[in-house]
Image (cartoon, rainbow over all chains, first blue to last red; front, side, top):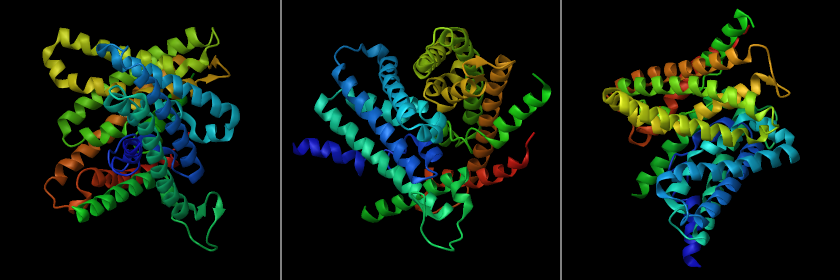
Length: 197
Length: 202
């Protein structure tokens, strides 16, 4: 039980996919304009991660080593298609806001990376908790980035105006603002890491 | 189908909605390989080739397989499989035909399979040039041209960035922002200048 909890925690802090492993940045930067989008993308990616981790670890003794990557991609793409259809049916507004980045979860390096590095060697239970932890790690990173961008870039949080008369820095909700925020955050986490070492 | 449409695809794909600075597709390879100009050039040429060819192939699949049989929901899965297979095939062919070329491109080709720019341009084409599951006039040429232009935009960003990072080696930068963080901050400043192209509309 304690081991499972460690698997779970690892994705959230020590091997956070966004800030430590620096994987899967394309959707992170593109959709983090508002917190709602960030949460939506985070949950979608977490669902795909969880599902593909479980299925791949179930199939790990049946997939031949030489063609494992195409097999992984088919499993991942299936879950992405499920997510896409569910999102289209129940939350068309979110689907429109996330646009082409929903199908692009397929090529998100985190998902394939976990399948390759973890799920194909581990038991189902371990992979489940790993997928859950990585998914939550990805989601909180997205919420942090989109929170900073939405607050400083449009003066709002979750769509509500926070400070009256606050003059927002529009550049942060533009694409280049995303690059700036992630660059500074990575630098900040490096300082924290160097301090501790 | 007219010349203005092609011009507007060119301007928007290369400058206004540049794959890297505005759409954030293919960031991983952009940050990892842009340290020197020569590998950056090799990578951009391979990306250009693959985006062009995959626009071509996925257009045929979408138009003649997925739409007639009402299978458009299989878009993601079929596109990624075809692209992965195609990239593998190119790698095998290059290895057989020219070992020299293989040494130049070979190591970058497998990376392109998971480059979001390639799948991104295929998805964009099927979103932009098909209305209600019907191909708009000239959609084939538009898709092909957009594939080329997205590759060009990637090459432009890659070459600019590698030029800057080569000079950066001579500078003293703070320990905390070395490598990745600094690359993102530079990309942010370059992206700002690309915002200026927003006024270019046809």
